[in-house]
Image 1 (tube, rainbow, N blue to C red):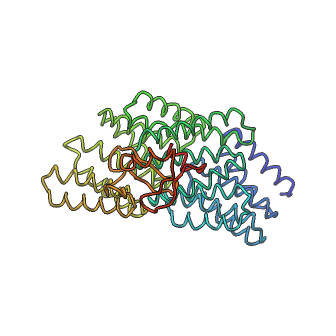
Image 2: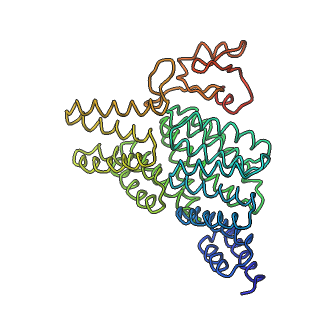
Image 3: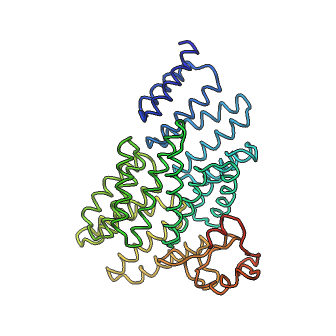
Length: 430
């Protein structure tokens, strides 16, 4: 096969991808790779394959293509390609919940990219997502602050959407639902605006952000009691995802529907949704969402007196998976569910021990308010983040916040000046 024809096949694959015919695009690119001689074309084609595999939920394939890109970048000794390949590799590991590897590869992407390149911002975003998985929220906030600055410098709205959405995820983890909702709403507003003006080559990515941000609105709405609003969001996201075969979003929508049904005490329906999502997420090697689905299923099963043993077995798997990821919050929530089970069986000493284990995990995640020394994220609360990235209960620093607008104040934990600035973290505090 001539190299000119190979290039034509790659372009045909791009046209198929734009038409959302992902499987046909993947087939076209896979065939063209077999006789491709140009290493730079191989690199870009592997990037297309990686993106299409991610959209289809083939996370391990995504990792394989990223590794092949690294080999090419080293072979031709090109730092720009190294930076792009390390970014893809970091994304693949974050999706597979190998968070330490994801952080390490993100640092390599930062090392090989120029300070003026947008790769820097996206590498920081992967680090932020990975640090959420590791429950290191101070690091999350530092990365988001830097990424937001880069998004503004490059006028990169997709990067800004990602920053906003990740910040919403932080507040969701800390159970400050109004702030989580505010950030997700802003992310969705920008994604809609961006999609309306997206050029053709960015249309797929822009529409994906619309689906994701719509889905992410549903959880804080549900937790604030707006079940109709949450249902509308997730149904719209599911419809959009189903129309193009976006399996990752479809699976997450099923989990979200299960959560909504469970919150309305429709536990039988909820169980069916979780049970439909779990094998999809397991097949995609999405351990983070898989664990969330199992925790939701356990909560639904515990409402039935006949399903306790099944719930215990699933909870053990959820705890094991959360531990393998290194996610302390998920581990703590599994322990708290176990405490509920043990207390119902009147095994009070064992219940006390698992509750203490949960509290230790919150402490290890640095989620004890420095002022009251009580855990943040165990129950719905109002959380405040200072510009130094330290986190407090809002009520505990109420006096400091009231003085903030007219005189310098210092963080009670690190003693740094926390006057209002243009940093992203400061915006989160207003």
